[in-house]
Image 1 (cartoon, rainbow, N blue to C red):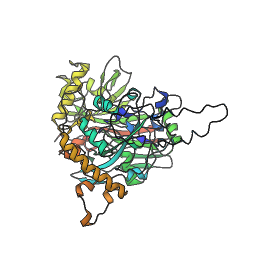
Image 2 (image 1 turned 120 degrees about the vertical axis):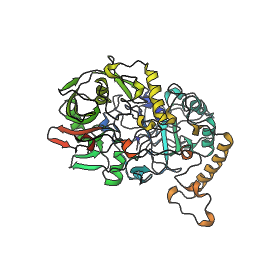
Image 3 (image 1 turned 180 degrees about the vertical axis):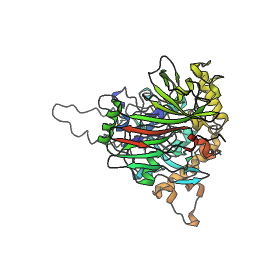
Image 4 (image 1 turned 45 degrees about the horizontal axis):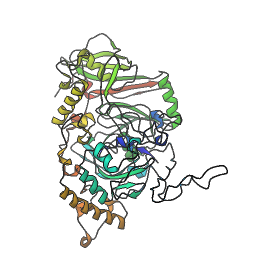
Length: 547
C-alpha cells in the first residue's frame, strides 16, 4: 500500500522524490506543498490525470503534501509501494496474447528496469504503521521515539539519464556527498530493491528507489485529543494546537491521524477538512469514502458553515467587518501568503466579541477556504493574531503588512522570516528544519551536516555492523534482546540512536507548551443535518490577560 510521506532527511528533503504527474509513467505518485508544506507519495491519483480530492487520499489531505513512504527500520516490515521483483517477469507481463509484441528485455549487459507494480488504492494507515515507534510524555509535551523509516519513490523525470551522484550533488545538499557514500556502504540505499553499490549508476525511467533513514519528529503538546462526537458516519474531535491533521513534513506519528489510530483504535479515517497545525478546534473525519464524498459535495455546494474565534492585536472595530482581499501564495515551501491582486478571490466576515484593553476576541466566518485566509486577512486589517508566528512577525516591516504595505521583495521577506525563526530556534513554527533551507533562501548551513569523511567512514562501519545483526535477527531493533556477553555496542543496537544520523548528534531545546499554542480556534462546523461545537478556549475568555 501507499501512504503519505513525512520528514525531510536526505531524500528530503524527500518532497522532491515524488514522480512527475505530467509524465504518464509517473502518474503513480505525487508530491505537493501545503500552505506550509508536506510530503506525499500517494496512490490516490485520479484516473483523468489529476489528483483526487483530498478526502479520497485516505490519511493525508492537501496541504503541504509530500511523498509518503512506509514503515521503517533497517529491515522494514510492510511495503507501501511494491515494485516488481528485480530480474523477474512482472505478474502482469505474462505471455503476450495474440497480436501483441513481446517487450524488449534490453541489450546484453544493459540494466533492465522492471515495470512498476500495480498498487491497491484506498488503503489507509494500519497497525503495521502505528507500530513503527511509540510515544512518551515529558515536560507537557508528547514526544516520539526516533525510529527507522523507508523513503520510497520512483525516479523523477529530470533524473533520467543522470547518476545518483549527480542527483545528490545538485538536489540533496543537506548532507555532504561523503554521507551518501557512507549510506551506500551501510546498505541504506536500494535501487529496484537491490542494494546500491555505486553512486555513479545512471537512473532510468521507472527506477524505484528506497532509502532507510533514522527519523526524528518534533514534539507537540501533551494535551489529549478529545472526542466530541462519533456515529456510523463520522468522528469529530477537538484538535489541540501544534498537532498536524495528517503526516506532513517532519510529522508522522505526532499527527491526529496516527494518535487516533494508536490510542483510540480509530483507523482508515478520511479528513473532511483541514486545520493548520497551530490551529485548534473542531475537526471532522468520515468513516467511509461514500460519506466523505457526500460531505465534500456539500462543501462544493457551499452548504457548510465554519466559525472560528481568535485573539488579535489591538482594538478591533465594533461593527461587522468583511474582507474580500485576494490572497497569493508567496512560498509553498515556507508556507507564507499575502494579499495581492494576482491572488485568488476570498472573503471573510469578522465580528468583535470582546476587548480587554490590549487585545480583542474576534469571531471569524470564512466564506471561502484559502490557505491561511483568516490570518492573512487579519494582518491586512492591521489586527494580526496576537501570537501568530508568521503574520505578526517583525519580518514584515514596521507596519507588519497592514493594508498590504510590505516594503520588501518576496525573497527578502522569506529570508527575514527564516532568519527570525532560526534566531529563536523555532523553525518548526514555519514547518521547516535546517535541511530544508536552500542557498536561495538563506546562506546558513546546519553545522550537523558538515562531517569529516574519516568520521563518516567510522560511522559507516558501525552502521554496517548494525545491518548485519539486523539480518541475523530480523525482529525490530528496539525489541532485540542480546545476552550480556554478546552485547555489541548497545547504542548501535538501540533504535533511538543511529551512527549515521546527524539529528542524533544535535541537542535541541524543547519548546514550552505555551509556545505551541496559536490563538486561532475552530469553534463550530455546521452542515445539512449536523452541527458540532468545541468549547471556547481559555485565551478567548473576556477577562484573559497576557502572561
